Image (cartoon, rainbow, N blue to C red; front, side, top):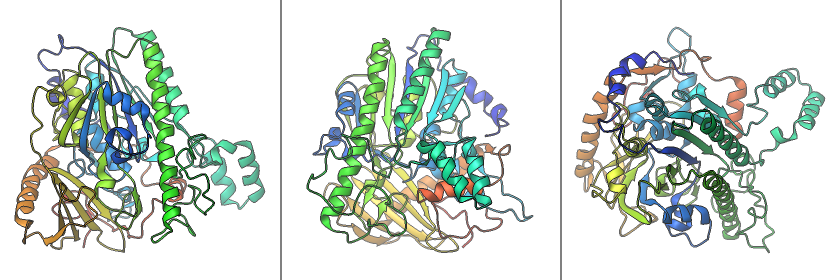
Length: 534
């Protein structure tokens, strides 16, 4: 769990969080749905040829769709911190899960520093009931999530994460009791099935909580955060969704499982028919989760909650299918990885059928929600309040959006990747440790899918100077901000990650080859340095 020691330091800012006219402003219920691993360009409402998202399409027609939302990174943990704090990665400080495994110089565990105030903290202190329901490990309190929620629960457990079965599994594994492990799997087959969907359980739990708080305190609005993981691989949606978009004659090796494991048939240069089938299975997962979102929205309608509930649907990152030589995610910052959907509907407070052109960012989600609720954003948030833009009352002003990623592709200092999205331009920069940046400049009006790989440059050459100026502007903002925001240390959690936790991450392909350095600090910016020594 995250320490609440910084609460006093945030107190003054929280007192100012209620705008002067907040008492007269509408107080909507807020439902924030994060659909993990959902790339925007595979939704029908974003122009995709397949009808993958009829319920989200309808939501967009009834509300506001942001056409070009950019994530702060291409994987779950730091993206969700950004989503819920309004801070880019270099400001909130959570750049890699290896932070939880760094040894301190004295041989102990290096504390993990997180900065920023979470959206549920602001809403709870302003009178909202708060509940959060998530379906994957990276959103656990171990990684800093949970502050501000009255109820915060993980759904869709596996044998790695189940509070009882995981202990039994580890004990049997430690003694090499194969027969005992087989009996345990027979007792709890659902926990050992990596294709079991978690969305129905999460939706049901969220609805149960909403009913409870509406019964117990009907005069107070609620904030419900719901994280849905089923679009993530393995791509094995329940039928009829699994093969909805597949060629019925396909009989190749691609099943949607083993996308990342040893001996996987999903690799560079795979046959076009195999890759096409893989994408069709991913699209089936989208259609499945879309139907579960629809079930939730129908339940809100049946309870008379539609008119005054602000529904926000976003994603943390996209998914790659070898457009630039890689698969899955957490490997690059191209548009297939960082262009995410953002749809908002609130019949009492937002127009219907509005589409907002131009770049916006995942960092804008929290400030926009607080703005629509009549509140100030969390202190330190650098994202924009786009409530007036969403209502058509203000233009979407040009802004540079920052994406960041560390790649531990070899021991030592990681490769730092930075994406800068400004207007119709996208720059992708890379540097090893503190070496000079080398990058690509892409004109999205000419190459919207970025398949041309763009004009290559060093930061001091060609189009480099204007990107250098934008980087310098970000440094001048984020450096002082990161040093000014109080840290929130996960100081009451078990230091480091357990063997079971590491095994759960490894089972989903989240491991790296980089070595963790002793004494490595976490106080330098990705855009300015590196949290690991060169």
